[in-house]
Length: 414
Length: 114
Image: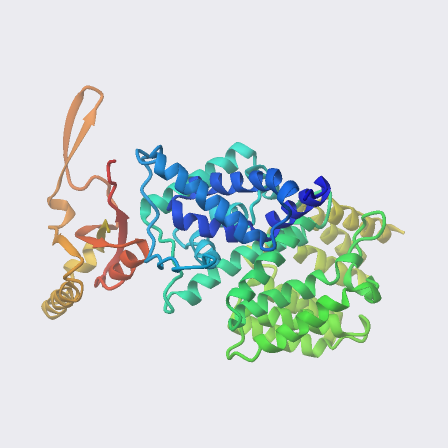
């Protein structure tokens, strides 16, 4: 039996994208060491590229890869070359006995892996880096590119984090029921950060980084599968789907920014919207509703509105009111102020925005200046609008956003 | 199993100003903590105020001795517990039970030299 090379390459790439975290999580159980596990998993994928053309792509690629990686790990451990290592072994709870006969049952250890990567004892930027590297299988170079740091810097960050896991005794286990809500919150914060970094790249020449958005959606779907009853997981997945559903309409053919009022709603992804709306309904059933569920509910109102003018702004303001009350933040207050401008008139919106001018956290946040500029333009306060656009321009590092603001500024002069 | 040191930092001024009744209650709470986590506790003590300390600085070919703590801070090391725990999460859970009315506690893994 021979399988065409292209077919094997595609199967291995697919397994890399879908199963890396599963294979690694199961291999860590054997190695009790993250670095060794990574090496063995890498070997297993290389072995697949060699073996699958002759023997065919296995029915369960993840199981095949896990067995290969674990065998490799046992081999290395048996040879003892790793016993004189300095790093302490990962702390792990009981390993269940292997089944007596038949196909070995590989436990799904991905929740352990994710919770270890996102442990609160690790620095937030280390959590993101470890998750992308260990759960998603990104290379250090890819993780470095995602967060705009050099590869040596990212390599050092990842090494430091792994050392801390072993040295401090951060356990490779699923947190207790008592700890779980707080720990899942930390995991969701990581997923959300990966998503927002991809959705509106903080700098660079493109608005959207599709690779990061896809990884964030993969992670959220994985969490949804592992924790189907968790309302916060449902809320975050809903928020990401409803936001990403607009991806085709956020820039024009020339890569220029198109804002929500001018987007072609017919091109929004109907399947993602339907999935997102169903998840929002489920997430909102929990009282009090979670932060992501409320944000997703706002995105759902936009997604289901027939047009910008047909948007239920009163409903959006009401949702922001709840959000601000339960999870106060200056950025939420800013978004609420903008919604007030559309629900009750530009003057009312400007009054709300001006009240936020003294907020220190918003002092360097370009979207406040941009929102003020837009409202001032609408009421023909041209000189003030110009100043506000200029302020927003100073505060953005994204090339697409910068060109948009420059266009608006030029239009004022006409 | 690993060892962790729980460091108790206290605001010494607030500590000194405590009433006898409050001080007795704090001792009682430490007693309750020690009872609850007796199996994990390997040692521990309270310290005299930092002003009673002497600090020895070495280096540059000489040894200098000064009065007081190594670093002058509002919250000073006031005591410690040495505990044994299976992992960091368990150590943090134990440390969260340490009574610390005038400050907070820090958990540090003990370095094991391989």
